[in-house]
View 1 (cartoon, rainbow, N blue to C red):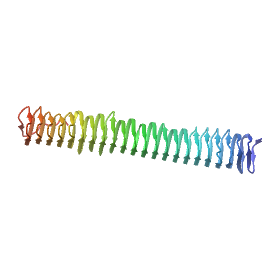
View 2: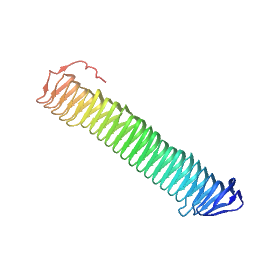
View 3: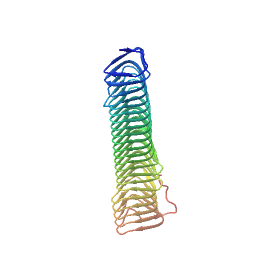
View 4: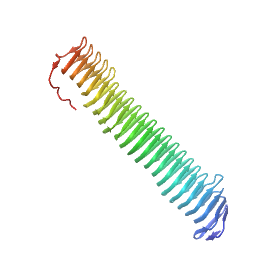
Length: 391
């Protein structure tokens, strides 16, 4: 049948309807009872029913609501106040709607502008997508997404993402720029570069470029090109290709490797820490090994039992525990546990435990206390002013 204008309702029962002048205008509702085809543009007050509908043109309606597992395929543009499709939705052109509900898979090939989006299975947005609230039970595959809140049960993949609140149960991958205020991911996050205000990641965070943030908490591994923010907590391993700058705390349970310089309000690393240059504004605690080329500095410095320090160590109060090996130490107060090995000592006051070995100089200004069986390369020298530390 060929139609142009329908004054009442249009009932489709397995029909193929041709648009006389490229457009069928229905002043009532379109009721789809069985799979039907519309060849041309379609306008209606409402589209409803329990049959599949294939519109080979543009579709515009105040409301689109199909039932009983039906699907909607629009080769052109889709415009509607509310869209509710129980099975699959395909749109070849642009999509403009307030509320979108799809039970299975939604594929939006053109730009999409929506308010509230709910998809039970998979959402594919092949062009730019803007929305207020996006909730997808399974997978999101998108090019560019700008929205307020995103919640995805499985995997979220996009080229670019800008959002306020992002929650992903599995994996988040953004190949380009990502800007997020609050981020919660149960598994892995992989981004190119961007900004994260508050991030909670269960397993791994990888950023190939620069990352700016406020507070980041990663349960496993964190790999960055470079980082700048307030505080960072990593349960396992931290790797930074460039510099890392924090205004507050750096906490790493295992190993931290910064190929550039690292600066933080306080530093606590349970295992190993490596950097070209390390500055802590307050505490600096390393459990096993600290390696720097230019040196490490903190107000209060503590090296764990049997620790190893490569590079100068500078602090107001430096505590090196039992059995550790350190290079040169510059301190106001130095405490060396028993059986430690040290290069040069430059301190106002120093207490050296029994069995320690000093291979360099011992230079002090106020007081020096040596335990039993301490091995010295030369006698301690009391001076008026200590030499300046390297940093």
